[in-house]
Length: 120
Image (cartoon, rainbow, N blue to C red; front, side, top):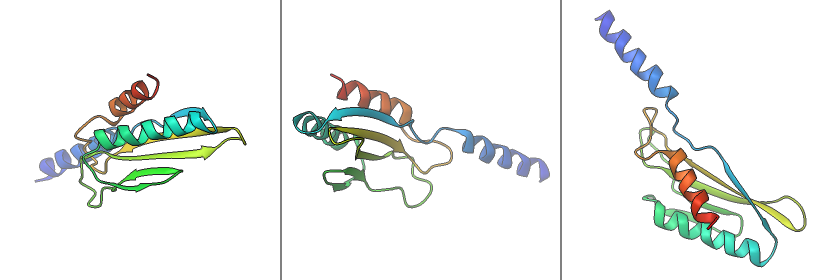
């Protein structure tokens, strides 16, 4: 019995080490048309890449539903636009899931695909 509990504890501990979030991807845009185009592309990317419904889209945040149960392997997305100066904004991408054993898709790979799409 002790051996079985040790195996379960090791699987849980190793699962917690698995990356269940992407690194932040930050892009910079100029206020006006440049940011409008970038923000529109970000929204289209999430709309086509997400299995989760988008629950918020405004001038500063694009967000899908968040994992509620702690076991969801589906990736959730959050993209924010924040002012750096009067003429510059940062658009910050973040992908994650709530499953301690990892996500169904790799959030880091999703971040790379997002960056590739946004810089075309």
